[in-house]
Length: 197
Image (tube, rainbow, N blue to C red):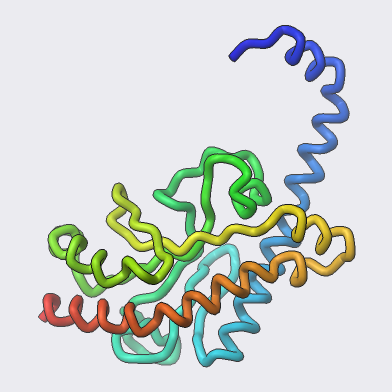
């Protein structure tokens, strides 16, 4: 929608808007680092393993069929940090985390035991197992996705108090939800392994 008055206001305030955009962009880095630290601490407390940095982000519980970084065989299932349906329309990481735009960030179940064709065939059956866990179904990706939604008011308080972990406490709640869903994903992995043999 074209609005000459709004466009005029934007141009009149372009320097301020540029400064705001730069600050919001810069805020993404410490928030991302805080998420990685929260995840690492939570994984240690709950006996999960993973890697949480820009190069590789994965989280896995212990157990049969799950990725184990100590094993020589690097196969196995895990959860990765991802965008829902790989959509990245929003300009800022903070916007995505708060679901204040179009995108959703969260945790996607990833497995390498079944090839794409077999996965697509069994996906509807597996989706029935996952329905009560809070995971969303990614129709295009044929995946299972647990969204993270941070309350912007709570995050703003954490930013203002220089306590990002407090501002991101809803993310820790999402990790706890993930732990509660583990038995369902254990059953899902067992079914996948049956088909992979």
